[in-house]
Length: 346
Image (cartoon, rainbow, N blue to C red; front, side, top):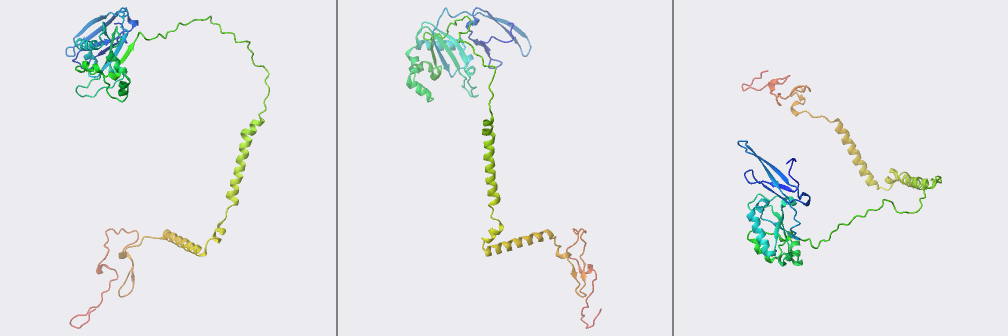
C-alpha cells in the first residue's frame, strides 16, 4: 500500500487465470518490525465486479530462535506453488526431520529454480521447473547429509552421476532430491570479516622536504634524434631504390639477344604462327554474312544473262519462298520442244 509494486522480498505467482495465486518470500533484517500492508484488488472478468482486501504482514526477528545449521535442498519434481502447500511442505520437513533428528526444524526460504537462473521445462507431463528449499536446525548435520561431501560422491557429481546417499530412499517416495546441488552451511564456524575502521587525524605523514624542479631548463640537441629517425631510413631507402633501378634497367637482355639464343627452326615456326594469326584477325574484321543460295545471282540457261537477286538488301524476305517457279522468273524464254508429228513449233 502506497507503493507502485510489491516489496522486493515478496514474490507472486499464478500459473493460470483459474488457479490460486501465491504470495511467498523471505524478508531480511531491514524489514523487521515494519508492518507490511499488501493491498489486493481483484475483479470479475465477466461482470467486472471489483473487490479489495488488505493483507497485513508482521515481520519478527529470528534471533530469538537461532538456527545456525542450514541445509538447502533442490527438489526436481516440484514447483514452487506446489511446495508452498502446507501438507506438502509438512511432508518434506517430516522427511528431513527423520534424517537429521533435530530438536527444532523450520523452513527458512523457498525459491523457484527460475529465480536462480534455471530454464523453463519442456511442455511435457510431469516436467517441473524445480524448487530450492532451505531448512534450518539447531543441531549439527547428520552423517547422512555429510555423505555428500565424500570424495567419491564429489567425483560422481563431477561426472554428472547420482551420488550414493543412504537416506535417499526416505525422500524418493515423494520427493526427488538432487544431492549434487545440496548446500550445507554452518554459521557457527563462519568467522566475521568485519573490521573496525580506525579514523585518523586527517593529516598525511611527514615525507620530508618538498623540492620543486628548477625554473631554468637546459636546452636539448635534437640533431642526433633527427639522424636516427629520418636520415638513416631515408639513406637505406635510396640505396634500395638504386639497386632495384639497376636490376630493372641495366640488366635487361633485350629481344635481339633472346633471338640469337633461340634456334632458327623455332623462330620460323613462331613467325609463321604469328603471321597466320594476324591474317585471321584481319579477315575477321571484314567478314560479312553470306546470302542464302536461293538469293544469289542466277545464270540464264539460254542467253547466259545474269539474273539479279530476287530482292534487295533492305527487302524483307520473311514471306518470300526460297525457290520460285519458272513462270515467275523474269526474262523467261521458252525452249522449242519436239512434237510427235515431226513438226517444229516456235
